[in-house]
Length: 400
Image (cartoon, rainbow, N blue to C red; front, side):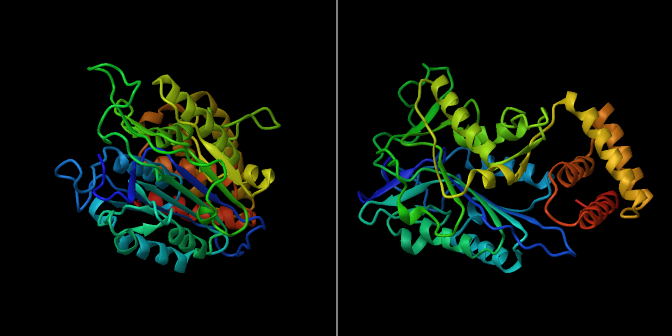
């Protein structure tokens, strides 16, 4: 379905830009506080100016909100302070306001994750790319939309030392079929539907105006041309692959000790998304191939592990034993109290024997231990222990 202006092209959410912003220099850590993880997630399925007839308004999407909501839930369990903006809450003003708010509170030691799923448009005359927020107008994107270049400048102003920006949308080319139509290669009637957007190819060299000008930037495009979402998966292909990386051990490679550490480095994410997106596409006789461009060195991509994955049941006993040993050491060093150790050991016992009975607070305690012990930030150990103690006591007392 074409937007009612020949100068603009609407892109489907299901595959595009992943911008990972890293600091090349080690961040400066305060001795008195643990680094924080902030996440702003935006998903837009419905628009203020929705299409009523072919050629009018903005076509609806199906899974952008679902993508953002599921990723937000996973990040919350991993200790991110998340803000989720959906549909009518994802206005131009609210998105900019949240970016400014985070810029005012984030510290150099912190991590910031920005995720967007929705329409992307490109103005043909200027080649500028825009998010189509809930109140966006394709005919006047600079007035009512969000220019990608400006968004990345706002991200650059967030003082967090590490920034991970995941953009699940398309931006380029002219639509040659309605967004709601089934793509060539989709199954016959009764089979899963495939939503497609067909446009010109994304160049091998990414446009310089889309490359943030701060050091240590990694850009991964999840598609060079066509963007797909699959009804049977109820996700865009790119986000489905991202969530799969966090669900299983497929993205977690074996380290020099011969074990998987349960944390996903940027390098592991890039490699997994490249393989999985292409595999999912080919299974539907479609073509969607990611690409990457980076200014960061390989060591930076390997050291930074922003996400954790779910552990297989067979991995749990060894991890639980390791966490108990660390908790006991902290008690012996008087870095945590015995009551914190006892509460954690009760949760670990349930995790080993009846993981299906874990409450949301139990799950967050497990993730707190995993983050602190398996993938600790570069702060003094007493700071890590104090943060674990405070979080566990808060959750046991009924905190979210």
